[in-house]
Length: 259
Ligand SMILES: *[C@@H]1O[C@H](CO)[C@@H](O)[C@H](O)[C@H]1NC(C)=O
Ligand SMILES: *[C@@H]1O[C@H](CO)[C@@H](O)[C@H](O)[C@H]1NC(C)=O
Ligand SMILES: *[C@@H]1O[C@H](CO)[C@@H](O)[C@H](O)[C@H]1NC(C)=O
Image (cartoon, helix red, strand yellow):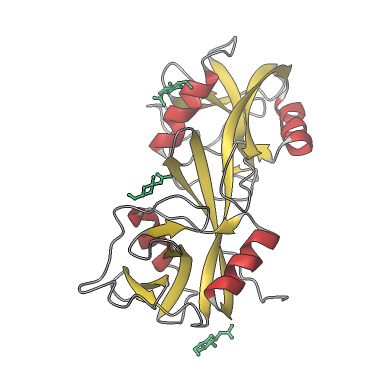
């Protein structure tokens, strides 16, 4: 079951009963819904759960050449009029296309890319799909330099946190409440003339303070902090000892219970 995997990654934020981030990974291989689910559970967490906004973003992936793709939506085996996510939760507010769903024997749901609407479909249809991985932000209350913080997050969790939306900034504020200082380290670094996230992503969403993005920070101001009172990023001295925000894997079991 070795697939030609083209990872197309971005972070989407959602809130269930706790604050979690979903990372969607595009798998450029044609599989039935069930094989896609097996694949996702083996290599990632599960087939993607996606809000309507996420479905829209996932459909905009230029790598998709097929007409449809799978996400983790299927009929409940006991009550076929109900739709459930692969993780087991009830699905609500699904954006069905006009007249859909229209056939009880079509037990899986695929996204029609041309209009970003859901269609019920036979689960044996062989199309590409999205897997997801689920993360959460945590505050580590150690007094570390930026590089020590990075190493700590990578050894014990996933990475120093990237904050890539207003919601993530607010979540960062919330999580930073117990931090001693106003500033906590995040995964922002200035190297070779530009700021980037340590996970390799470009800095697209901007959370800089009113002074704007520091274009030419001095040598001792090239690590990024999140300043919780003002909910902004600021350049700071990498040698400062601060608490920090890590991205932590949130284990989602095959049954869909997350902890
Ligand atoms: C998946 O199927 C479509 C349509 O049959 C085809 O165009 C595409 O090349 C297939 N993708 C792969 C990775 O085999
Ligand atoms: C899912 O929806 C059904 C029908 O509305 C309901 O009986 C069930 O309790 C719901 N399950 C969860 C976990 O919310
Ligand atoms: C902040 O966290 C607390 C406790 O974890 C939660 O009750 C509250 O809703 C959160 N606030 C925001 C704005 O997310």
